[in-house]
Image (cartoon, rainbow, N blue to C red; front, side, top):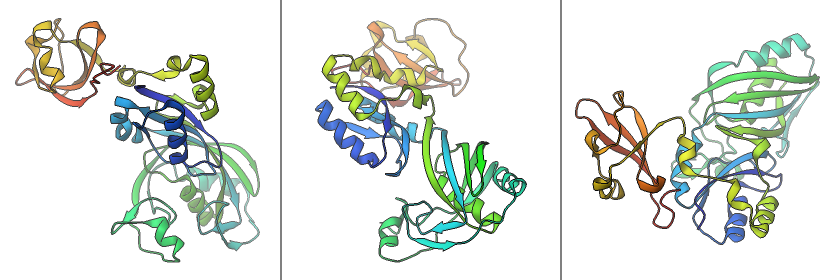
Length: 305
């Protein structure tokens, strides 16, 4: 079984679940999960977790994301992208200066109302299921953060821009909100996810690439070990006499750890055993000098690597 993360470049026409299903067939293993849905028409980075790496799915889903989007002013649709039914169409009588001002006004925190065509649930039902039934329900605005915005090209009524944003940001809705602010409406024309956390599009493989690498024996070089995701954390090693404790997910005293390091209160560390076996992430409590498990990644066949 493969363990770790593989950086996939999702191509147009596939859902994120399609990608997972194809990889299960190619890799002959069921334990695979993706880290954040991309719409079928969107392309780009989709980190996929394998084996024990699936325990990372929720953590990677919260990573900052970068996109390049195409915005078409003067059109609105029920899905906020070009796949939906057109609701309005008008001339976008907007100057470049007005467009620039409207786009950059969304920098920072803003309250975004999720679209009806989304996988969010209201009273146990997915919003897109209700939308397909012609129903619209009230959605609460959610706080999202636009960390970076850069206009790459502007040939009105089409604008191409780069955006770095927080978890839960809908770029379709951002396009719609920009159009509303300009008074002419707007729709997302295209979307490429260029980065998720530390995973850039330049290093991503298509599903076909994965199949080819499996066949030529080079796939392992593209699977990122779980502990590499936490390379920014200090690494500690458990003394041989106490290795059963992290194997069972138990807490550890500082005296059970090799070395003399001044840990900060609530500092998270990577915990290893002999032969660089990765157990998981622990949190240090200064008052008790104890390490408490945060997330365990030990695998029976791979030792979490």
